[in-house]
Length: 321
Ligand code: PBG
Image (tube, rainbow, N blue to C red; front, side, top):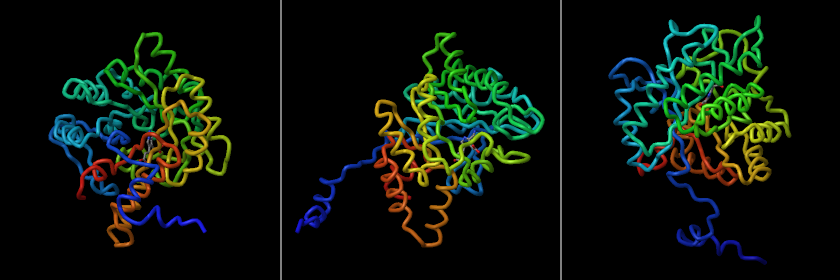
């Protein structure tokens, strides 16, 4: 008989045998930015998460830095009046995201700023690409994604993070960054699945598609090998970091990716629906919130992710909720 219980006798012993540890450096915190001043807007479906105007970012980001969280992922949330079918608001050099990036890099130089690069936040139809009839068109979308990424990079973003799931998006962005001699890196949302867990985000970002769904461009979760192929293609096109999204229901994909590409930093996105489900379950007394999110992050890292994008980052580092 092997005595496994000797690994578990007390706190210190369990700590010694732990293979996975979580630290502040593992986390990337999403930030929703809105126009205006003195805005800190509640998001009904994401309790504890807010939309900030640029002038209210100072306290929020200072708080993050104090907790040791030095990485943020920005999403711009603009008014319907600024949206159009071509997503031109996305690449205005003075766009909301560009202004937020400039502000953050000026006020918090050590902060690592990631920006979401997609069309859904800027198109009047809410899809992640340009339309040809009712179809999202891949190739005409690529230059638009490249222009958005270039605007963010010129504003000083450390990483641009293309999330539109258009084929060739990393290559198109890499080409414009290289042409300008910019050292901005690319975090590719490589294996991004058409998921029911994005609901609260679309509410937070005002980016729900006005018709149809995203299944013609986001991945079908019934596929087994395609996730690894998507990641391989992005690395080949010049991605510096890659991502699997969502996280909890895709631990197998995270594991496959970490084994297949051990040299490439891998992020996993614990998406809005995952966060909201844990929040609701905790509010109903079904789980202890801290234990539940800690278990979830540990599983994500154990599967092989190096970085976790999560709305829980602050709660995890803070000792109390
Ligand atoms: C697209 C984008 C989405 C999310 C991040 N980037 C929405 C989508 O693809 O529908 C979802 C993140 C979350 O649910 O927390 N720009």
